[in-house]
Length: 67
Figure 1 (spheres, one colour):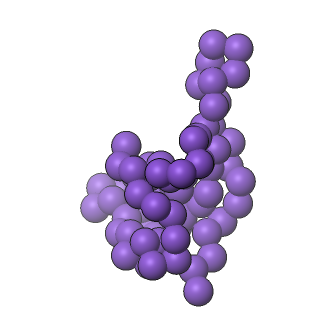
Figure 2 (tube, helix red, strand yellow):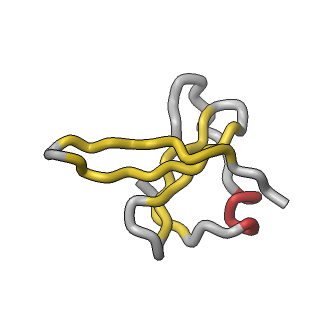
Figure 3 (cartoon, helix red, strand yellow):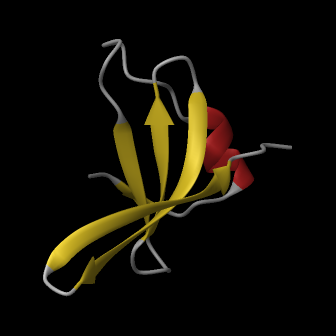
């Protein structure tokens, strides 16, 4: 999983996966567990990923709106 500083400029430069069924996950360098999921078709969502009772959980926070 790539690690980047999640900012508007970084989000504008992100490209979707060339494969239709594959997602790209990018983690933030400052906030542990926070990141962006990029789906095919340039749909981006904020996510939080944590270990809960021994299981990895990924929760969608909301859509990414780039200014």
